[in-house]
Image (cartoon, rainbow, N blue to C red; front, side, top):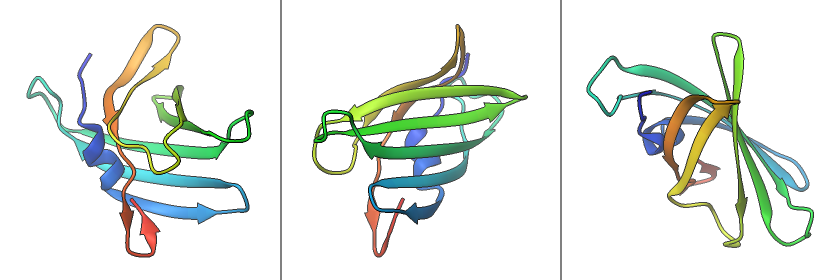
Length: 111
């Protein structure tokens, strides 16, 4: 399985939607495989919402590849944007992506 550079995909292009207590981002980029193989297009949907404890934030990242849904979750306990979070997008034992992601505030939007 190829490892991808997550920061490039999250920092690629993002569309921002905001409601009362959640955030959704749809990010796209072309990632380089760690082993020097073909470049891989990557589209990630991120859904962020208040965790059940009422304090922290739940972050769910999803991607679909060849009709298969791959997901990863993270509980953000920092009170700010997630930074250099290690994730693995999986479906059962199948891995689509392994790496890190960061959210960065850019002007009026998030990337």
